[in-house]
Length: 214
Image (cartoon, rainbow, N blue to C red; front, side, top):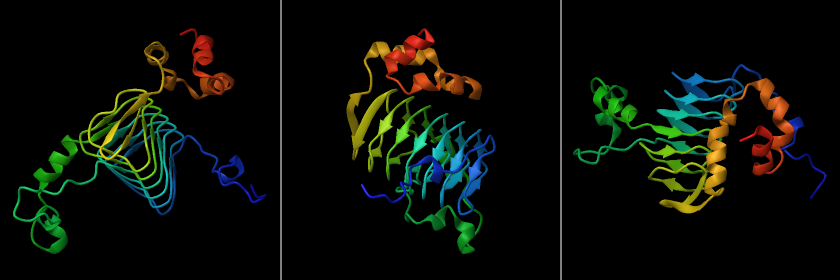
C-alpha cells in the first residue's frame, strides 16, 4: 500500500452533527431526515425518510422509501425506481409526466400508486454498490444486499442476499443471536449511550450482547 492518504480515514470524512449534512449537489425533496444523517454528492431523495445516523453515498436515487436508523447505502443504489406502465399503449413517461411536455396535467393516480408501493429499509442494513430494490420490497433489520443485486422480494432480518434476482446466501447469525439482537433494540440508543457502549460495539456480537445483558 502506498503512503497516499486513504480516503476512508476519519481525517478525510466530514464531522457530522445533529443537523443533516447534505452535499450542495444533492437533491432532497419532501423528505424527513434524522440526526447525524449524511447525503453525498449527486444523491436524489424524493418523499422519503432517512433515520438517525443513516447515510447515502454518491449518485444514490431514492423515492418513496422509509429508511431506518444506521442504514448504510453505497454509491449508485436505487430504491423504489419507476415502473413504466406496461399495460398502456406507450411506456413513455409523457403519459404520466404530461406537464413536462405541455400535454396536460400529470397523472396523479400513477404517482399515488407509486407511493402506495414504496420500499422499507430496516435499521443497520447495508445495501451494496449499484444495487436496486424494486417497489414494494421490505429490507429487514441488519440485512445485507450484495453489490449489483436486483432485489425483487422481501429480505429477512440479518440475512445476506445477492444476485439478479437476489437470492439468500446465508443468515448473518444463528437464530439465538438474532433473537437477542432484536430484543436489545440497540439502534434506539441515545447518542450518549452509543458513546458509552462504543468499546463493546467493536467486539464480537456475543460479547456485545452479554455486556448489554441480552
